[in-house]
Every structure is written in C-alpha cells, then in structure tokens.
Image (cartoon, rainbow, N blue to C red; front, top):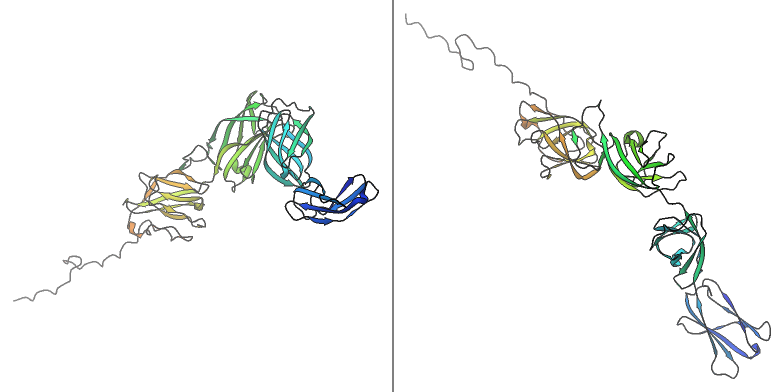
Length: 424
C-alpha cells in the first residue's frame, strides 16, 4: 500500500454475503468504518483512505454476522517508492552517482559485493542525484561490463538498477611550483612570506606527474580554476600551456593576469581532464594575490616618527607594521582611494604588510628611504588612514624671511643709536 492516495484492497473468501462491516486502523488511531462492495459472491472490494495518511502499519478488520471477533489483516503503508534510473561511477572511484527520484529513501546499495552508502543528495532538472560512498575498492569493476546494483530502501524494500562503469578518471600529482620573474621588469619590492602565495602579475610554472594513466596523453588537458570556479582556464600541448618533460611528466605555465584578469584572487586549484572529458580530482595549487604598486617611502630622521608611503592600488594591502608581530600596526580601509598613506617608521628600510587577498600571511616590503630634511612633525599622527588622506608634506619647508641689512657698525638685530655729541 502507498500513502498519498486511496488504495483498493481485494479480498477472496467463501461468501461475501456474510460480511457485516469492515473497519481500518491506521497506526494507533481508532478504527474507522470503510465502504465495501461485493462484485461477486466470493470477492470483496474495500477502499482504504490513505491520501492524508502516514506510513506504517495498517490493520483491516472484517466483521461477519454472528461472529464476535473479526478477521484481521495487517499490512504496511509505504511512501511512494523511489524510482531508479542508473548508478554510474568511474572504475577506481570511491564515489558513485545514483540517479532517479525520491532518492532520500535509499539506505544502501550493493554492486558486485561492494557496499555503497548515501552521502550527498542533489536535485537537478526534476531528478535526484545521490552521491554514494563505496566501502571498498572499485578498481576491479571493468568499464563496459554489465553490472546490476541492488538498492535497499529505508523501509526495507529492495530495488535494482543497471550500473554504468566508465574508464578510470585521470590522476596527477603536483611535483613542484614556482613563480618566474620578468627579467625586463624591475624586481618587486615585496617578498612573499609563503610559497603558496602566487602573484597575479607573475609567470606561474608547475610540474605534474601522471599517475592514471601512467603516461600523459597528447590530447590530455589541465584545468586551472578558482576555488569557486569564478575564473578558470585550460592548458594544452597545442596552445603551449603544457610541455612534456618526458612521457609521464609535464610542465604547465601560465600568466594569471593574462588568463584571468586583475580581479582574480584567492585559492586556486588544478586537475587533469582526459580526452573523453573525464575530469580528475582537484589539487590545491596556492593562493592568487594582487600586489599594490609601491613607489616611494619618505621618512624623517627620527625613528619614532611615522613615514609616508606612496603608490597605487594601496587598498590591496590590509595593514602595515614595523615588526613581523604587527604590534602597533596601521590598517588600510577597504575603500581607501588615496595614493599616499602614513605607515610606521621601518627598521633598516623594511616594512611588513598583510595583503587583502591573504590576510593570514606576513609579507615583507623593502624600499629605499627618502629622508625628509625638515620638521618631521609635519607628518600627521599615526592613525587608521581615511579614504582621503592629507597631502604629503613638502621636501623642505619654506625658509623664514631674511632680516633687513643692518646699518654700518651695527650688529644684525641690534637697535641703531645716534652719535654722541662732541664736547669741543
């Protein structure tokens, strides 16, 4: 019996003319009378109202004239059974995909002695997709061979569905990675504090080793994408993004700024894609970070006084400090629009900063210091910068007006006296 609709029960007996009444008890509710009819002398039809009923035990009582106790018939009302389309996986995978409807009812599945249990349920185009984890290795499942999965529902019912086994997905290992500097560009003033930080403006190079299959195919691709796939690109042998070092090792190279643009940042990962479109697992590659353009650091001679740092896209920095522990640091507002910012006085020209794209890592900024020759007190006090900072102080404040020339015989700054009278 299936809930959500009215079900009709068909009974057979010696004589339906002896039936006095029929009742049904749904779960633990009180019995209620049911309408019934007898299409022929040995048959009885009873309609059970299950449209608004829940799942569970259903008891039907058939009373006959002259008998105190009824005949009892116990049945089970189930939810609408799941409908299974297929179970698919790649040979060697630990995750399989079950497609159909009402897959929330699935308790487990068995394929060639391998147990699979439900993991994640998704809905796509009015169909369910249930990811199922394999408790054992699926490497012995042969692609193209016919298999059948026995699927058990949570209420105990069992269904079967065909299994599609595809070839193993490609698997690669990340051997190394690095960022090559542009030999024609001036060296960066920022030394990155983590090998996982990858500057967007750099030339990214990394090596991959093929595990499955053992050798790289010439039509295999490598996909590089952001963690939420808001940016991605594909590297191939034909476009120069990949170059085979040998049969099972390939070098991948790309310029993130050219491929992704200046708005790409955050975690980035890589995976291999076979010629037939099967994609391997993602491997973490690092974190794309954008660097401000630093121009000049101007400081007074007094190390206790702050400095003025100028540059472009300064909002890409989250904070500055004179020590790596970031005590007494200066924070940069996310909406900062200026080209100059007051920063702590560096020690030996070294400042420390945290980038907005990776605020957990301490970076190092080294710039030559331009000394401010006069009145360091003209620099504003250390405080979080505003979106519209004060203009930078001039290199040399204007000199005071020159004193007028003194008269002959008179010291500068003294008051002239009339000559003494002649006594003669």
